Length: 354
Image (tube, rainbow, N blue to C red; front, side, top):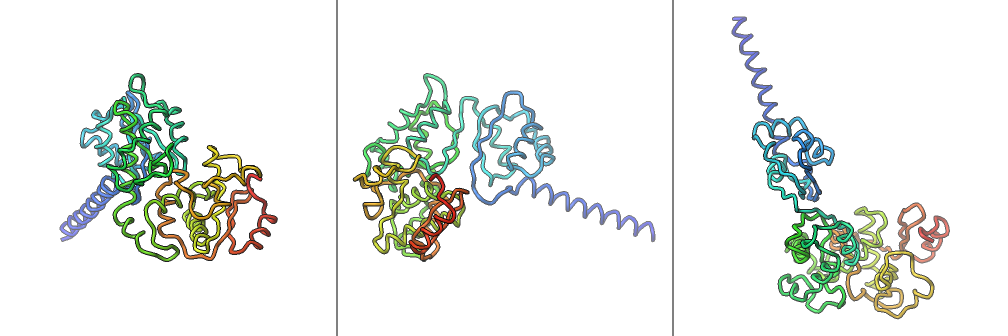
């Protein structure tokens, strides 16, 4: 009897351990580390071992266990099939999906990451700095800007403005900032298409239906207005947090509602062709529609290519009474409902960059 009980206990323990082992395996292999989408550039050098690759993936927070990665690559015999080259992975990919993706690399492909909230001219500069390919398959900033001006894009992507406000950069605001895997052989047009495709994915049909209706904190809007607002938010929100982005956009909505000029110096800087320093006293009175201190309403076009967070902040802004904001010397953004408190805070905390 005792022997039977012992056997039952051992079987129960083995069953429990097996069950836990299966749970651990499924969790590590099939469950992504993150539920949110975020592209991550990844590179495998020639001769890198699966162990080294697993360690790199772990350091980038793409997998939760190097042990699980090592076991999975051994069981599936994926290790010898890994390809040297560049990859664009995503934080919401499972370990098994990552292992599959790493078996289809191409040494000639390059990755590039466009930061949120930068104008096209700076994206072009980044392309030149990155050196995407080698001659004759070298994508240059000049080719990128030329491809971005092609009017035929508007017939392929319905979200693009039919009558662009700028001849130099007609689709500023819609070349979505993200990490991209680029094949130099497809040229600048291929990269532009990837960015426009990504904008279409991010600014989904649900978002388009949502902005067509008024919501708490904003009136009904169209894509163009949201992109313009978000482009200012990404230039002006010094602290890249959801709260600051939302509050900055709420200031814009509140000012527009009462026909108060936006007073966003970043729009004037865009017309001046620079990001810094702040406009001079003489520049502040320039007669340009991008001078939102002297011209009412929105600027004619977006002033940068905003990311998903800024777009979301302008689609779902908080309802506030805020009308003023500034960033102090420590990088903290202060918001106020009236000019008296705004001026008092500037005296108390100082203005960054002043």
